[in-house]
Image 1: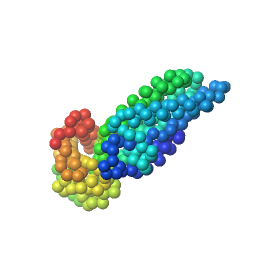
Image 2: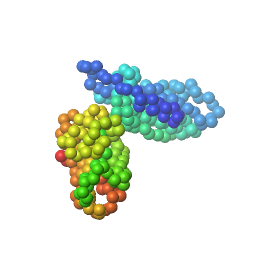
Image 3: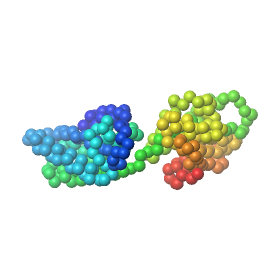
Image 4: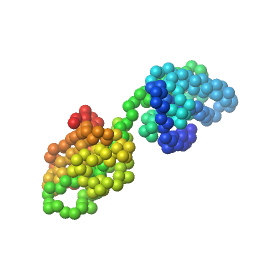
Length: 293
């Protein structure tokens, strides 16, 4: 069951979402695939027909209850207007124990918004009805969660005030800056609020030279070309070999307006502490608190 679901998830994340025609129903299209069923309980009695009947009733009820919410409508497939896809499977492992693996995919964002394993006891009509009532609540909660913001996090840059200007960055500085960038991307991506956009395709000189901090907000337009909703430019300012500050600026990719900015203030620590300071700052300002302009 798990292998078939993983294959389905991988396939759906590669399928482009269909766009709803102009003037179409404002409700969100949801496609619900028939769940698979596997019996590994080892019971001597062949209950295939009974399980097929109960699974069919489960799917009818699940589709009915999703469609009963005015925010959603059933769609035949991703290609026919479904913004979300619900897939799953049920496995009976013993006389009284069954497992349900359910996943919900946001097709447009190419993101799994729910992937959970549930267990329910019993194998009669009442047990299946209770399971469906619980599962539909979980699915509806996943569908209602806000779509993650597509965010382009560009490589962090270094503003070194400790020495005369030199051409390029030292290898050690590049390594530490890469750690900062990776740490910030991981923290924001794992939060579920953001979908981190790949910026490796940006060919602009200011990107490759890590000079976005001085380009007058050009990062917003670059991020927009990459399909991002917002852009983030971060800077580590080295005050001395044991003192530094971290700052960032978040812009709307369409308008270029600054949505949030932050500065850590003076911190003590060697180069290897840059990552900790940057992740803490961005998490405090964008995840734990309210983003401030």
